[in-house]
Length: 484
Image 1 (cartoon, rainbow, N blue to C red):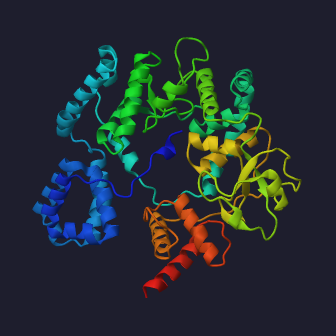
Image 2: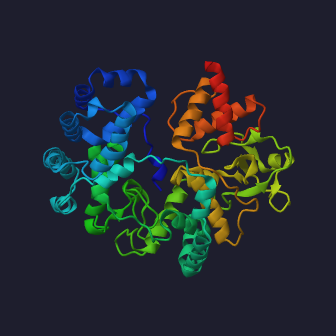
């Protein structure tokens, strides 16, 4: 539920003390790099920040005593930092000496504030017993994938035949509960089970991190201090209310909990004690977990009586400028009647439904892949997890659970793009005037897809917003000619 709420910033903040150490180590070279070399600046910022001052001091001592800086080029220093330092210090991101001083001073302040907000000393003692930062949480928080995740790879994993078969069994197993929840909240059973399947594989992967430890680590780290401050204090409130013990309050590295991965703040707002035992147990009680999920989807605005969208067939010579390329698919919205007049049909060739509902068209693999009309309930799914791949996967899995077959158009094979290639693509789009605001971050988000679509349109290409190797080549060629 929380995965796409965490975004890697383009430039992580480096403390003044970190800059002083690096100045002392590299001399004026480090400041010169920071001023004049944007690619190198990104590297230094994103590499130095997680090391923290004590680890920089350790590395400084190594460099000075070994004489390594007198013989290494910048690229070699990059190798040392990227491939040695991060792996070396990932397990010691918070040295014991620092934990005993900085962390426990910080924890004392947190305890005091929590107590003033009504958290009992017994709850605080239990929650904070033997608490230390979790280096693996920081490592996962900082990680950036080397390659983009393709839609074909994502969907084949998210909607595997095994997950479909298991989901259909869960529908039968919990039919009475799911029918009750559909009547109570208006959420069809197949969608609840699809969310359950995507979030934790029906409870098989609920997360193995202590939620107090994970949220405390991220709060103490400070990169998203206000966000994880709230989640930590909400987690403490959950303990205070007696819904779970600290030992059983497990979740993802970011603090998402239970069968459907509620963040602590979502738990307090939407969790339900469906079985009436006095506890809202989203970890071990399926009725509580699924009722909570239904309550949340209902609160997000699920439109009862409508589905999420559907796969469709497009006519030949379709104008792909009509597709919506931003994540929430809020552009180019038309009624089903209007789409029908443009030649859009069901995958079997039959007319679209006569329902009075608006839809946007999305083509996650471009003009050569499947096409989908998506409705408002698709955007409700995105409010749960802001990822177009996730929204399409939940919708398609729900359809499969309801008896539908695989995608009619199939999935084309895709080659993932390296993050460095995406940065190069973005830099080219900026140079050509198609991408403004935000710079090159290596993420194929809404802005980049919109810029690709603009480039395609200006070049007389099919304007589907899909970025592949051929688009990268064309952008590189044309942006390079501007510099020559």
